[in-house]
Amino acid sequence: MRSSHPRSAAVAALVATALATGLLAGSADAAEGAVSADPIRIHDIQGTTRISPLNGKQVTDVEGIVTGVRTYGSRGFWIQDPDADDNDATSEGVFVFTNAVPTVAVGDAVKVSGTVGEYIPGGLTSGNQSVTQISKPTVTVVSSGNALPEATAINEYTVPAEYAPAGDPAAGGSINGLTLEPARYALDHYESLEGMNVKIGTSRVVGATDPYAELWVTVKGWENTAKRGGTVYGSYESQNTGRLQIQQLAPLAQQPFPVANVGDRLTGTTEGPLDFNQFGGYTLVARTLGTVKAGTLAPEKTKPQAEQELAVATYNVENLDPTDPQEKFDALAKAVVENLASPDVLALEEIQDDNGAKNDGTVSAEQTLAKFTAAISAAGGPAYQWRTVNPEDKKDGGEPGGNIRQVFLFNPARVSFTERAPGDAVTATGVTKVNGKAALTHSPGRVDPANPAWADSRKPLAGEFVFRGKTVFVIANHFGSKGGDEGLTSHHQPPVRSSEAKRLQQAQAVNGFVKQILAEDKNANVLVLGDINDFEFSATTDALADGGALYPAIKSLPKAERYSYVYQGNAQVLDQILTSPAIKKFTYDSVHINAEFSAQNSDHDPQVLRFRP
Image 1 (cartoon, rainbow, N blue to C red):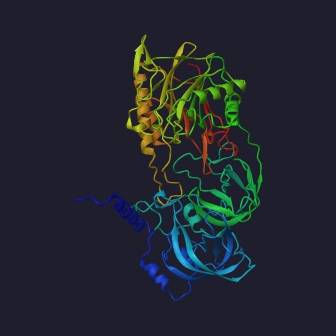
Image 2 (cartoon, one colour):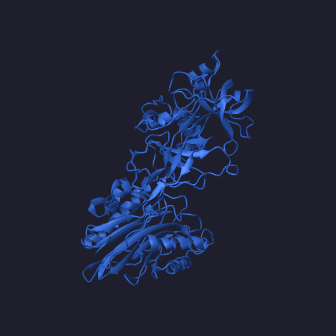
Image 3 (cartoon, rainbow, N blue to C red):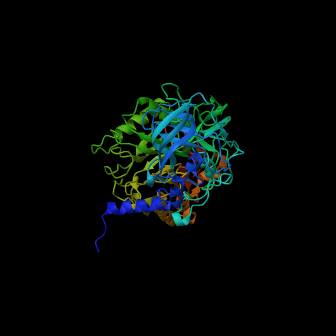
């Protein structure tokens, strides 16, 4: 039998998914609503689920008061019915998508005719929830200058503690068709307010202002609080229900967006329509924005290592290459010297080739590293030497043409590097015995580079170091990214985390290699470190630690200090250092210098571990 055309199959699959999750019109309820003799109200459009019962239908003369006008991006305006029904599950607000700059003003009473639809920010395959809207509108302004419907308060008392209902197995795990329970689930609570005029009071900032003029607050100041003011994402069940993204309606040219860091406070009342977007989900688009009151947060400085302590660190320097401004090199160098106290060994991730993203076959990073180590020396740091293995062109993922790779920097005044037949991009280092001790066959060398787990991903870099006569094996990693994973506000609950499969295989490969070293010498000092791109509670980390081969050292910290990255207001672990069983006593520090701040030299915080081999 001939197979169907793949595009046809894909379309069929999308349609099936849409039907299962209620995104295509055609229900009996929709038809009944469309022919009802009663005037259609906004709560009739919104209904009691995430998908409008009138999806795909024409509506006429829907009445409401304009509560917000957006003149950029997804242009349109929000209207709200001041005469609410008695059902908390039905929103009284809706977005009217105009495409062109709207001609209405806040406070206008309008009648809107148009087509009800469900817009999915990011597209159907993103997993995002949809926004109920009226498109292709005909708008009649009935009067102007009307009082706005009173804003609904979002606070610690109104947002439920449970995050989301479990998805319907019959609908592929989607929650789209489930009746909203706004008093039970946080996501249902926010959805029941979609498009409505809402407000928050003074709230703590848990995600710094980003380049896209948005920040994150929590309306639950006590929820999984980080030691420095953020909100810790400590498990898949700790989504942190109080987080809310804040944007503003005013164009930036008219009103600059405030600069805030984690721990600052957004004081006073912030009020406006509740939107949903692909970069964070539920978002208060402020018509009235509170005032940022700065806190006292400052970048951390780790304790210098003692004479007999080896300090090993990892730092993702975010696509560093010679075309970056000297200021970036200088800032990163200053951080290495002043904040990381010049570690003896520093594993770097995202060192790009000598011309960065220019895609011309260049793979050497000698110029990048010469420029960076010179900046470190100029900042008062040691004269670091480096070791790395150049990747094959365009084989390791990352920014096209950038050829990112891991690199070891080491201070030759404190530690020596054991060179053993340096490997190339496709040659796997192995484990052997030299003078009765475990040793690498290639140092520096790559771990299992032909393993399909590393396809289009960075291969681990292994090296042997000697400190005060003791050998230390260091394996630097940059596991596959979380690209393709669904957000916490996905209509699938729990969300689909498709990227985990690759990292699990990568973790298994590294764990297997560490076990080879330990099989030759159970007392070997082994450190596995880098941008693991996964949480300390993840299956990835469990696979790295399998069989007791490694211990995730960040777990030695109190829970309120376990994070290296802030994403959508959640402080979380991506960067890690793991220790072999011989390393029993150590001190660990997640050095918070970037993730909590609007001004960043990288989006990651470096990690440092000190121990006596």
